[in-house]
Length: 276
Image (cartoon, rainbow, N blue to C red; front, side, top):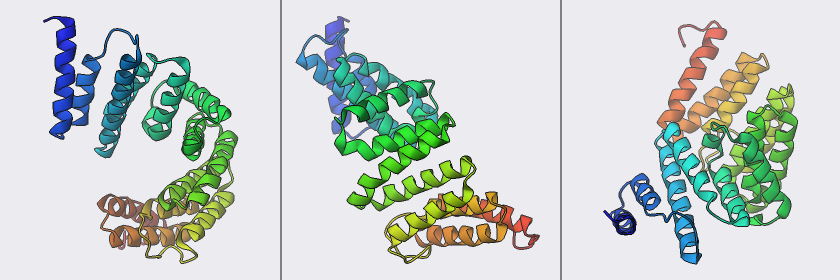
């Protein structure tokens, strides 16, 4: 089959796949096969950007399905597609991909490159709308490199915009990241203090049993794990109980399983084998 004809058929298949609301991975693969050999004009650029977005959506779907290896493969393909763009365009799209898909990105061999890309984009101030996400992504990448001081600084820089926007789910995730970075740096008490601050801010002082419209079990489980690391299994159990309450309140099965796992270990440490 003629190459141009083949690319046209793949593009048509991508359109029909999207209309039928089929797998985003299938659509992304059709768009990949529909790409011209090189970007020569505005149409080629638009097609490349469309491919990058489709690969991003497919990677997000893979993460939702707990298929991290697939997400990493899709992310690698998206980053390769970014190289088809001009330098400024490439930098912007790479930074957006890293910011949104930082967890699978940390399992690639390009963490150093991600750190450099994020710092360049943040230095230009061209992505003010994603400033907090990019600082958080930078912090996650620096955590992967065990640069605790750099990670703490990046997480703290991400806090300001999120607090102003009042985005509670993102704030809880960020405070948990910050607390874990402090704990890894040997500052467990400081990490616990950050968790308390974040909890008070997101619940307006109502505490760990607050009836809020966001998932909190992961956050509260982080507090339990830090208390355990600090050598206080009794406090750790209390916070694990809080996490279990929140997971049960929202019928979050994964949270319940994680809480039962930690509670079993803590009850064993407290010589309460029957409860464990």
